[in-house]
Length: 88
Image (cartoon, one colour):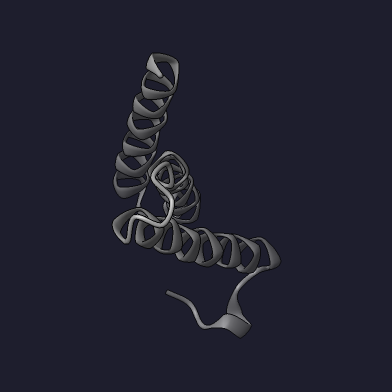
């Protein structure tokens, strides 16, 4: 990964979004694991999809195969989240 000063504005924004969503995934997962909020997994799972989507966007120029796998995983997670939400 490039150094912060060598990144474009788009890359910096995507890195910040990825970092924030990753932290949120950890927070919601901990809320679920510690039984503080029983439905936190319904927020954490789609956020993992967002993290993978942003990762795919960042990787698309450098490594398309990794980007396509990230996009595929992201779509799979979103589809699973929609199916779970509709079955509630």
